[in-house]
Image (cartoon, rainbow, N blue to C red; front, side, top):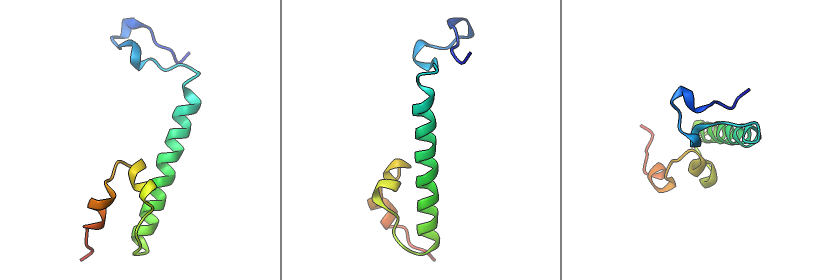
Length: 69
């Protein structure tokens, strides 16, 4: 079972239940897809999608300031 009890020192907010699994798996694939999209755009020399940068926690304005040498 994925749910842990309080004996292992974790707080209640860190307990993972089966109901949370689909959301966490979905979030994983969102982050993974955005990282691939940003890497591809960067490799091809074009600007990545703003949404993909935000999903990864990257400020689009700061990303635009990066110059390739």
